[in-house]
Image (tube, rainbow, N blue to C red; front, side, top):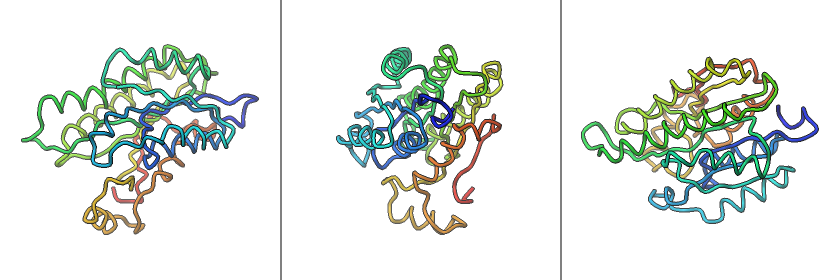
Length: 256
């Protein structure tokens, strides 16, 4: 389970860790801190076309910071929109670190558009990355799982976005159903599967107007931080989190 329970550190695979400000980066570091070796994927061309731009030093920084917690890491640049990349990801992780015990799906395609202005290409890209890739990763994980019964973990990051964010919200809704299916269909492996909705999280994408609206809507009166989500995911991946299964969890300060 978590690395403190074993003589060797278990292996977690986190997807979408291309920016130091992102939630996935916090997941990598929190899991490293709590005893895991961590593989992570990233895809620079996605960040290059987004408003925040690329973060060229992110991979090195994450690896160096994780190493300070005693974790081995491997970083894999991969376009998860391509359907035939999944086996290669797991081949690399197994060769460098060992078999994956925890799979944390934190990657996404997220480009705002609504019912009337979403293009077919954008719609398909969202479902390819957010939905199809997640299913393929879960399937590959299950086929290769070698951990003891009760140790396996799948955590997907989801969203309740709808208005003005149609392809993102719809593809995340489909991801929810896949995650819930995994909780049942992988029960024979002793693998838990849960989805976490972190709510609006301050990772550099919010305008001043959005920040103000989120603050006014959040009972706890502050913006969500990447670490908030990482704390919950680390718990779900730990042995203490082993009885939580098949849940859609909000970790958003009460905004939902």
